[in-house]
Length: 115
Image 1 (cartoon, one colour):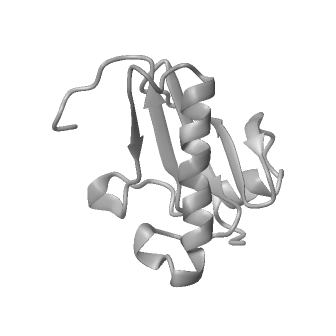
Image 2: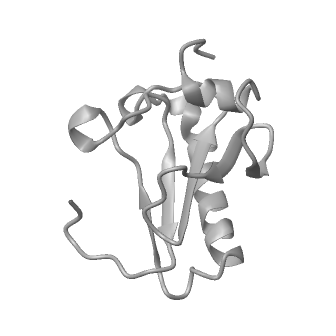
Image 3: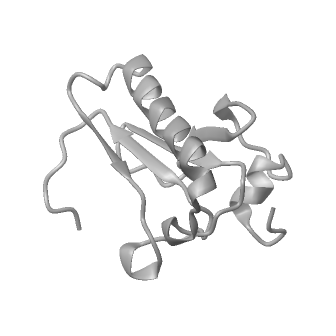
């Protein structure tokens, strides 16, 4: 846990946030700056700053996150039409909060390449 990290504060429930899903390893909640009809953030409870900082021991955690993204996409009815999963790594890629997280976006069409 990083005391200065807003996502750690959310995970620790120091900042009130309505979770869409929570288990021992991850939390899921709505992005406050939504870019699609469905825009959820998947956050590991373990503080990992960027994708560059993952270790081999994090492979189970990351697999679990991807499986949960798949499950939530199905339950939200966007799996068949399609959805986007985004993990930004460092400032030039658009990472604003330095706690690893994945965005699930769906409910509309997307173009390529992204911005």
